[in-house]
Length: 361
Ligand SMILES: Nc1nc2c(ncn2[C@@H]2O[C@H](COP(=O)(O)OP(=O)(O)OP(=O)(O)O)[C@@H](O)[C@H]2O)c(=O)[nH]1
Image (cartoon, rainbow, N blue to C red; front, side):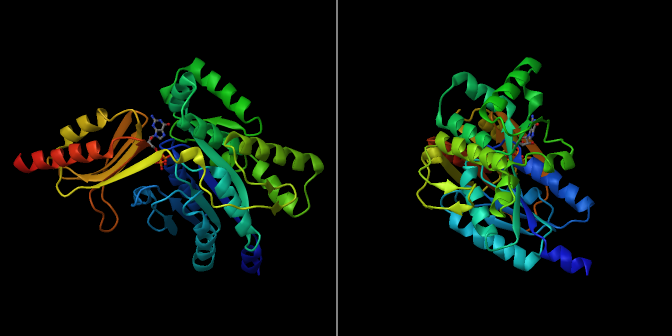
């Protein structure tokens, strides 16, 4: 009897947003552990700009995962999200669903897609968690310009809860200023400072109820003040990216939909390199350390010519990280580079050169 009641309840959905490399996958792995400890069955929708789902490699193999690759969920693959959610629910009957957006996504679009789907499926959007890279935001804020800065600001404004992550990379005074800045940009979302997304998960999952208000409003249960609060959050968010859509959450209607891509991240480009040869680890590290500033994110799985193990490599806002990995399944040696209008040919040539050198080693 209990089981039937549970199945009829809505499945909670969490959206993870945040700029490229801010710590979304780090948080996702921790959330999954948390739910598993509670004997809950999570499912994941993962969206990657590149052609390969590298992040999927570090998520527990047993967790059902839908991959949406080669485009950003909020534009090119947006229409698919509803279908993916429907499939996941039907095939896996999860207790909870997490959607990890690409770091270039505008979360408002994902929020739209989820709420649309929840009109005909038992899904309940619980919160939109935006993970912020403290050091990166601090750097961009001091420059006060650029499309990346604007996109990061949009992601912050849309959040119902904010994880101010990578606080190990900023000074105490800077951290305080960043907290104030987040409060200024989004007065509704609680701000939780973290290192490696280390947070009390129950606290996080119950923080930020603005998105939830929208659901109550649809059910007709929200007070006028709650409706006003929700529409305020939404209106502000839309203004920041010049959104031409007219969504009215307080009334529970989506008046207009458009598949028009947003200008906010059209500037983001991706280069995926498939290695034909293993490269020298030190030469590769030097190459990564010298990556141009306009590449802000890179990740990959590599075999080096001088190491026995394979490595999971990451680069985010000038910090790189190498971790031994035994990939699940047949994974090629591949690296993905994401940035703004960078010279893809140059990156390709440099990597081919590294491959050529390692042959003659
Ligand atoms: N110094 C520092 N590094 C961190 C912290 N949290 C995560 N990282 C590192 O930052 C890098 C990016 O973390 P991810 O969790 O993969 O970031 P992401 O937001 O999922 O990245 P995309 O999916 O590419 O958008 C990894 O090398 C992490 O180990 C932190 O608090 N401090």
